[in-house]
Every structure is written in C-alpha cells, then in structure tokens.
Length: 466
Picture 1 (cartoon, rainbow, N blue to C red):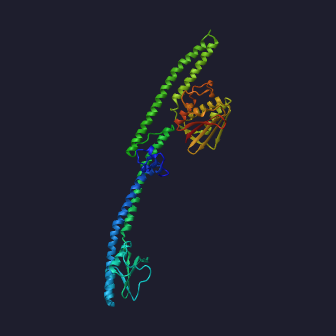
Picture 2 (picture 1 turned 60 degrees about the vertical axis):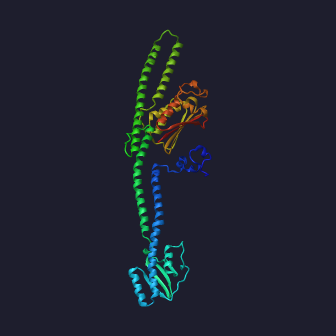
Picture 3 (picture 1 turned 90 degrees about the vertical axis):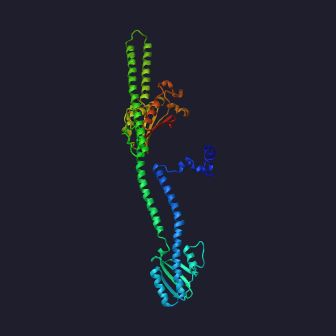
C-alpha cells in the first residue's frame, strides 16, 4: 500500500477495489491542475501524446523495420554483384568498366586497393540477430569480412563500406539516403508540427471559453460583496450561457425580494410608530396620575421604541445601499470621533495606508458602531487596529472587559440571543448587535470572528475583501 493511501481506504471507499485507490476522485483532485484552463488543456494533451506514442511505436515496429530491410537488401545486392564481378574478372579494363557502371547505375563509388587487408576491431564477420539489418544482409550476400563506417565522411553525408577481396580491399562510397529512410524525419516533423498546431488552436479556443467562466465568477463574487453591476451577457458555450441566464435570474430574484422586504418593513415601521407617538402624546397630557406610573409607562414606551428599531434594523439590513469607493481611514476616524464625543476611551491604530475600499459606507459604519458600542458597554478601554493585507482589510476591536467564553462565541451571533450574566444583560439590548454586524459584513463578502483579546477581554476580528 502506498504511503499516500489512507489506512481506512477500504472502509471509506468500499465500492472501489483497493488496488484502484489512485482513481479515487479525492486523490485525483490533489494531483490535477487547479485551473479549468489547465485541466481542459490536459484532456487534449494526454490523448494526443498517447496517440503519438502508439503511432510512433507502430511506425518503428512495422514501417521502419520493413523499409529498412528492403533498402538494406537492395544495397547488399548491388555491392555483392559488384564484388562478385570484380573477383571473377581481375582484368583492369573489365574492373574499370564495372566501376564506371556501378557509379552511373547504382550510385556507388567503387575503388579497389590491390594487396590490402582489412584490420581493426570493427571488422564484421558472421551474422547476428541483434545487429543492424544492413550488417546481416551484407554478410549473407558477401560472405566476406567487411566494415561499415557511417561517420568517416560526415560532412559529405557519405557511407564507407570496405569489403575484403582475394587480392585486396574493395571500398564503396555511397550516399546515406540509400540506407537511411528519410521518411522518418518527415514523419517526426509532421507529428510535431500537427501537434503544435493542434495545441495552439485548442489553447486559443479554450482560453476564449474559460474567459466567460472567469467573468461569470467575477460577477458572482462582485454581487456577493454587495457591488451592483450590469447583467452578465449570456455568451459562450451552451452551458456557460445557461449558467449566465440562471445567475441573472437569481440576482434579480434576490434583489426583488430585498426590495419587497424593505418596502414592507418601511410600512410596518410607519404603522407601529404612529400608535407609539399617540401614546407618548397621551402620557404627556395626563394629569392627576401618579408621577411614578407616568415615568414607568414612558420608560416602557421608550423600551418598545428601541426594540422596534432594533428589530427593523435586523430585518431591513442595508440591501438598498450601493457599494461606493470609500476612504477607509477617514471612515474609521469619523466613527471613533463620534464615540469619543461621549467620553469613550477608544484608541485607533492603523498599519500603513488603508487606501480606498469599495463598500456600503453607511452599513459599514453601522456595523463597526455596533461592535464598538458593544465593547464600550462592557469594557473601559477599547483599541481598534486596521491593516491592509493582500486581498483583504482586517480590523480588530479589542477591549479589556470580561470577554465571552469560547463555547458561547458562536451563539453570540444568533438573533435575539442573550448571553449569560458575565456579559451583564441588565445593561440593555435585545441580542441583535452582533447579528446585525455579521449580517452587514457578510452582505459585503466579509466575515466576523470572535476571539480572546491580548487586553484580557474580547477580540472581534472583521475581514473585508478588497
């Protein structure tokens, strides 16, 4: 079993044979390229390479072998015929006639060295099934020791073959094309050229198709961050057009639901505030009633109005606001200054330039205001730190209050959820501060996390994408 194979693979993937564990989608996902462009290109490159390997094997195993043997047989027959003639007719005139005839009809440049003998380690005597076909064919035709030198006349592209004769050595010079199949180079060039052309066309086509998928992803990401944009054009392949139409319909449906909810809640707010206002007016005109009762009723009405505002703020959200470029440094300073006017002990620290960020500025100020107000309610000192890092902005709100136990941090984001007395529920609130803050940030593509502050209290970490 491979080291990469999980120990409980057979148990977790009982439907797949254990020896095919490398075909498991989870394992393939780890080794496959990450981008769609790379994966689509791989689906083209892999089959083409496989086809070329098979074609090359078939070519060299059949065509190359057959053609090479035929060329070797033809050449061996010509050399054997010249050798036999020169052996049988030693007369100089007859040999001269044969040499000239071999040059004109067989493209062989033949010379005879009388009294010479072959020497060296490259002399071939006998046949070998593993040797070059030319060597075996020459031996079968000549039955005389010989040598073959492919590189002696490298610049002239000639091959030198020397054959032992009874009275000397016959040297034959011939063009390489007589023993080398030029179709090999044509075949290789054709395969390489066609493959490069195919890769180029496929890459250009795939790039145009993947571009629409990237644009769709960017449109979805922008919409997820609360940034409005035009309808995504339904272009490209059928599946891409189908996804674009589904995305446009989904976005319109979400925007319509947000608009309907906002309009409905605006009417509810108006209808509920009217009787509250009349009740306040009646209280102010009441005479003769005990002052304690009037004060208690007035406090109840104020509590009802505050709760109504919190409920409406949670349900309404900030869906109607458009995301605009905002100077984040200035926005933070305005929020902190507003709290400092109420004698709040708040420090603002920034690391480097925060720059301009596209967000819903009113909603963002409302979110950060809830976080700061919540920290101020339970702590004496609040520190805000903001830093621009890579593709996001990170803002932390630290306090020196009692904090929130780790087991209750996620529950703190639930709507209308009040924490234990460690967060002093008697100070007011309806349990929607953190819920509204997370809802706002997530509508802009970010998130909020709770943790332990170095100051001993609660750390609220806010992350916003750029």
